[in-house]
Length: 113
Length: 113
Image: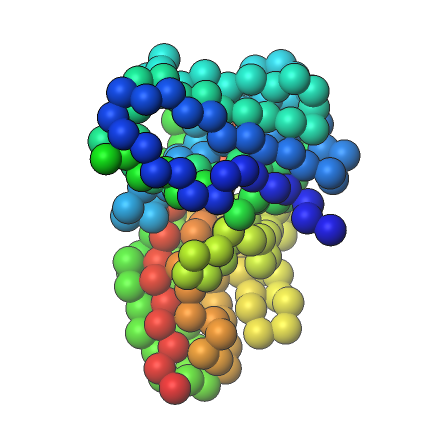
């Protein structure tokens, strides 16, 4: 059974388009995250939700908007895509609170042309 | 915020030898230090973690040591095997940090058969 799943796995789109990435976890966790991994492999936190409430909101362009319809889902919508948005986006989840293992999804490779 | 640095950026070892990756952190309030392994094209996965109340933790061929005074921690892999080839990320977080992980930039470990 897949613990943290993301769709789509690959996303190729043109500049200026709007796209969404979906994430679901079946681990019963309360906290979910979005990370961006650039071409140099650097993992950077973007957002975190705890039980549908935004708790981490890093400095990302407001073209990126997360949405959590329930605690098992965290989606990422990106408006007006730019070349620099090309990266692998990972969703993750964990138990609520501090210092718990984060379980990552398989990643979505976004390519903006 | 927390700043985590990793050294070296790339490490090549002969199969059977040991590999050591070192990380330093800046925030003395950090008290949780996980290590994630990311194989090519795969998701990051936790391999070992250590909390600030212990100085060393071991799990089969991998071990992590922590020096709180010097604010550094290290990953040790003994008897390396080809399947140990991957990017390894160290991270740090603190109890009041919403489980926010500050990742290092990653180390590419290459085990030469």
